[in-house]
Length: 166
Image (cartoon, rainbow, N blue to C red):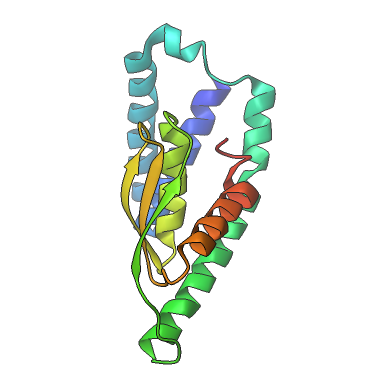
C-alpha cells in the first residue's frame, strides 16, 4: 500500500511539474491519472513481476539518492545553458556532433532515466536509446573530444544517478 501511495505521489508530482500548476483541479486530475497508471501497472505486470520489486530498505536507499540526482541535474542544466549561451553569442565556437555512450544492457529503467536527465540539459539531445546493444546516442554541442564527453557523461551518471537508478 505504501509503495502505491509513493508511486501515485511521484507520478502526480511529475504531472504537476509539467503543467507548472498546483491548481486544485490539476492536482485532482494528476492524482486520478497517477492512480490509474499505478493500478494499471500492478494489473499488467502481474504477481511474478511484483515479487521481483526491491525491498523496503532498497527502496529507501534509492529514494535517498534523489536529492543528489536533482541537484546534479540542475548543475548540468546550468552548465549546458551557459555553454549554449556562449555559443549563440559567438563567444565560444563549438563543433556539434554525435556521441555514443555505453550503458548497461537490458536495463530500460536506468537507461530511460539517464536519457531523460541528459536530455534536460540544453547542450545535449538524446537521439537513440538501445538497451539491447547497450548504447545511448547523443547529439552534443561540443563533440571536439568524444572521449572527454563520454568520460564526463559517465562520471555524471556515477555521481548523480547511480544510487537512485542503479
